[in-house]
Amino acid sequence: MRELEFLKIIEKTLDSSSFLGDDCAFLDDFDIFVTQDTLVENVHFSLYTTTPYLLGRKAVSVNLSDLAAALSIPKYILVSLSIPKNTKDSFVSELYKGINDVCKEFGVKVVGGDITGSEKVVISISAIGKKSSLYLSSRSNAKKNDYILVTGQFGSSSAGLYALSNFLQADNKLINSHLNPTPKVNEALKLATLIDSDIAVMDCSDGLIDALYKISLESMHSIKVDLNMVPVSDELKNFCSQNNIDYKKFVKWGGEDYELLICVPEQTFLKLDKNIFTLIGRVQNKDNKPAVIIKNDKSIEKITYDTFKENSFDHFSF
View (cartoon, helix red, strand yellow):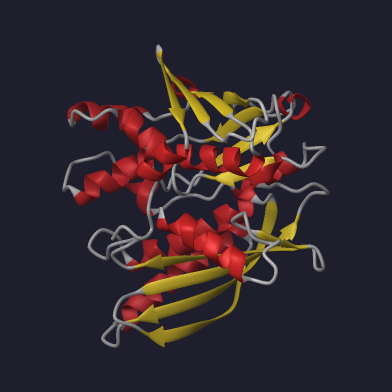
């Protein structure tokens, strides 16, 4: 997987890489979190299947999702936009309407950015959030016997993308899950009020198992989950039934759900609202052999590095 290889090169090349490893960096000098995500035309989105308005919303939401995983209060964003020279004024106007609407919903302000020419549309956003808790979240914080929880439902976004890409009829809920995701900021801030130790949290932008494996890798603990406990929508099951697809493939490896994956100790788990946070498994031993063990009906599947590399989203496969 080229992304991981490049990240290792970057880590070895930099004089200091202590801030790397999570989707957000915590700058303790200022008590803030910073993150950045980039959406590239024909890699992360197609202008044939989305609108400028929805693209603007999604570009902000994916960054706020990273801040949510850091249990951070989103405050500011900077927007860098690269567009072809023949881009219409209406495209920029609608794009920024989408940006503005999401910012208003979460109390965020646009404080700067850049605009340049390009052969295709590229939108890159830097987001800044304020620390909300005495404690921090990081992929490396998972501990033995932690409860593994998720917010929301899984598989809907990737099913929506599959429907759009293959010109298939699908419920609007699936399409909207892909084109207009909602970052779980409010859920994260509720969690932040209940923790009394550092915990592991990650958003599932590249898929549920991708997030599970990365937490396993960074914490050096094995993880065991029951796939049947993962929440899914009836719309996803109906779509897959109509098209002879195993819906669990979308649940396991489909990305862009932007739900949170959370590992917490028992004392925190007992305080959480089970209507918001769903239990799907437990953290196992710290054996320095990262693996995700998935129970699926009567079968057991073990995800190791080779399985992860083969199935996880590759940003350089286009």
